[in-house]
Image (cartoon, rainbow, N blue to C red; front, top):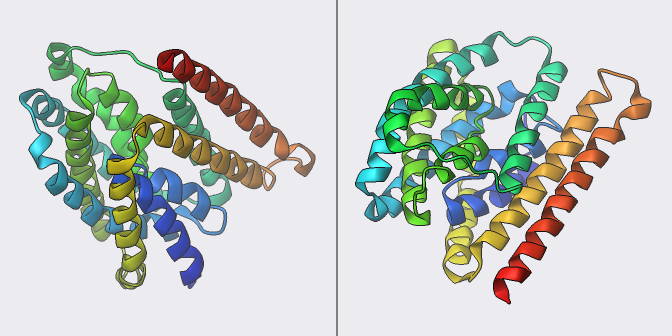
Length: 284
């Protein structure tokens, strides 16, 4: 099945903006929108192929921000995302019911986005991380192998380690490079990757470059980057809510399809209002 190049390019352009600004957010923005029209097996190889180059670019751009702390974090988190991404690719390979699979993907993604929007924090000391880091990042790798999404859970994990924003961007870029390269290898081995992927990635590359450049520019000029990041999370949660409801309608009674979307929007609006009030108190 041929994909709509205009639709694909517009979504990839939009999704590349937060990637340029924060070093993550590409798949968590693109996947919910693309899953409305296509399946995981159709879009995951394309997004993975694009992300390999995006992530490598982000490693180069943020290499100056590395520190011993961020290196320790990435070293002990790498085995989990590497093995998990291979397992996730296999799960994608054997998945049969595409609609139910989409519902499961949205159901996992939405709580992660909302937890991030709520400012969830639970720091793990580096000594403890050395013992359990690979266990924590394994399910993140599985999620990436299935959906190419790992930004929200990785952001939750890395934000909880007390890293600075610059160290954070380096650490997340390295981990996402590891998982994207290992997933690409698994897709090739399992036959999920096909030559059309290169065609779509090539055609949409101007949209990727333009989106990332705009994101980098916005990341440099926006004074309160957290405000922009919070708006991106709201956008992702609303789109994911629509995607969940849209696909849930195909599985259960159509009369209740809009309730999940309504509930998700209501929760996000509450969290957004709480965030705005908190920002106002800080600015006083």
